[in-house]
Image (cartoon, rainbow, N blue to C red):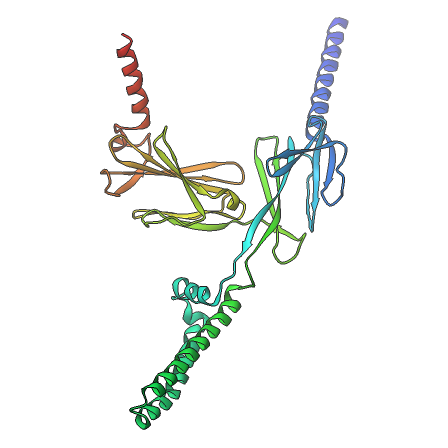
Length: 360
């Protein structure tokens, strides 16, 4: 009987020791030493490394198993961190941008081309009409000159020239004022830089949290959350927007359309139009387009979207007939219509077959 009590006591002791060990390990993993990263100071904490990476710097803990970056301080922002996660890294770099400005002629062309539908909203149309009407009334002087000096053609030319120059100057002035008011027109174009910060946190369950901040144009060292401006792409158009770059891959016979490198922290691809199909814009970190050319002549267009949690989503469309742009939704594991020949995999299998036949 005493042996049973001894056995039970040993078992309880082992169980308590094991549970305590697990609790200690769990606490150790969840709560390492928290290090605050203040990027406003000239020097960083000795436990944090600054690693140069192309155009920017990564800030990481020297000993990631025992130390973790907590709060991150820069400018007017304090990004909180309780260190109840696996790791946190910080990336920073400067991105260049151009404050665009137009001459009077460029400004007029831009208003006419890009804002012709919105002229009533901005009141430009009414002001231009008013200027023209005023000059039309003043052209009575021209009629009087013509009546009095029918033979004096030079006088007519002079009056007409003066009125035409005056009309043009007044219209340019009105349009320019409205452009400044509604489009934020500034002085000469100037190349400037804005700093960005990206705080990436990986949690115990594998979830990724990415927070991005960018320096505002209004005030130096004042930051706000980075929201990329969407550039919409219509693949039915003859030309692509200048902000995107198409790159052809000879190996896969595909064209990748992505944002220009310098614009990836400012812009992103938004809505994509493919024939009659529209892939709507969604909040995301990046979006790209892949156009695959199959051996049978048909194209497969895939829109790939990357989110802040590093999740990736894609949607594809395939031509029903080569060169007809009659696209339909496409999935490789879809219905019978999707079981077709002529894919890249067919090419690789064909080359392997030729190799086996040649060396037979």
